[in-house]
Structures are given as structure tokens and as C-alpha cells.
Image (cartoon, rainbow, N blue to C red; front, side):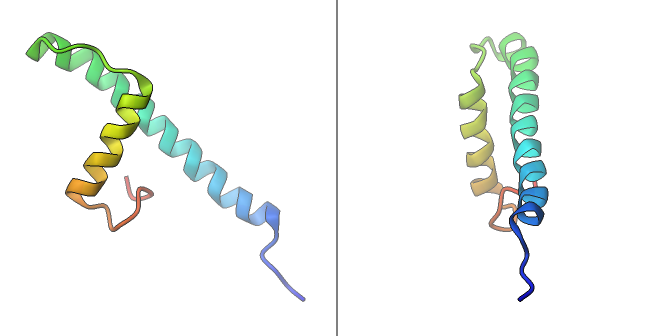
Length: 69
């Protein structure tokens, strides 16, 4: 019986998850170097950036998945 196999599944999902966490870190960095200076707001943490990215994906639509970010 031919199956997908755990290695093939990991080979696909691990880079996708890693890319998502990298995008979150990028969002945090961009926020922290821009928004506090422009609007006088506070810097944000990594997990706040994570939640902002999820909210943006829900509001602006990414095909129903976060992979398209």
C-alpha cells in the first residue's frame, strides 16, 4: 500500500509553519520600528504580532487560510 508518509507530510508543513513564524517576527519588527515613532504607540510583543496577523487574515481574507500570507 502506497501512502504519503510522515516524512513527506513534515517536509511540507514544517517549512510552512516556519515561514508563518518568520512573517510574524517581521510584522513585529516593522511595527516596532514604525508605529511608536509615527503615532506614539507602544511596541508590541511577538504574540501580539501573531494575533494581529491572524486578525488581518480574517478581516482582509486570505482564501480562508493563513498559508497565503
